[in-house]
Length: 341
Image (cartoon, rainbow, N blue to C red; front, side):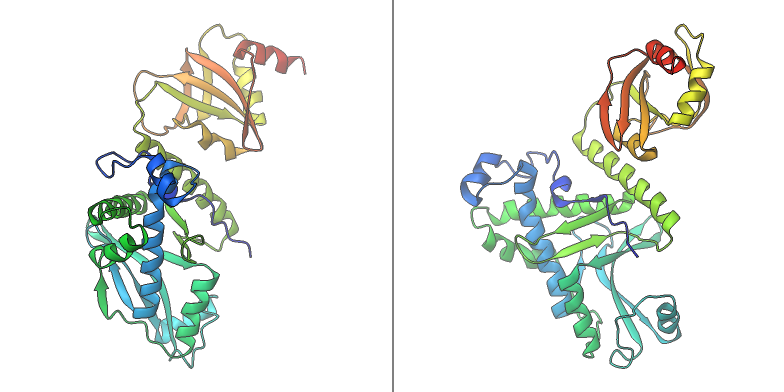
């Protein structure tokens, strides 16, 4: 079965619009010392990716628990499932690759644990092929994955700095701390994380919940996209420009045309969700007609409207297979063109 792992926030996106207080080195400085990179955020993310790969490998080899810096009671730790619960999970399709004799009827997995309010929450950590193979080989050879000690960022900074020698220990620590703080903020916000360090150390990791139900996968896929876009938008710290966007599918456009044939300035929209980020509308259907409305106040990333009349409305164009095509027509011309079809 194909699983939808898309829309995880990458390390490069985690370092979007990094404040100068974190590090004052510019993009040219990184290129001169470490070679060509596609963007400034890519350069800033490299120490974080290297550190993350070290963490995952040390967890699997040394059976340690990593304490996430800048977060209250957040850890990369083992989930241990044994006894009848292990049998039940195997019946449901989990731990199929684990030899239940060698593992002593015990399944192991990695999870991101953190405290959210008074509750403890967690997300599964999915390992790529090489790491997964290493993990399974150890479990099937009788390794018991019980945490032996805590691993902290301070334990890793010297090793990362040895790789990026042009950076000082203080700069490396500042960069890594910034990355893990943002990673933790993503997890609390409900985002997923995708980290691929194949160019530095062979490590591919995905952190986030995945369901086996196809319909629920599509819903979760859409939510991950929205949360990712909103988190990155928040890091950009752009002031609210007063615009929200509405997307109408072909069927909704027909309803809208019928409701607004004689409209002069006030346009009626029924059962819609205005959104601050235009890209959130693209996945609703293969073809989505995009309208921009002007509001004086920020009403959140999106808000439900049962029936609302708007005055300042601009028709922008349509997204076709998630690619935006600008159209140089007004909403009045759109109605006329639609009626003549």
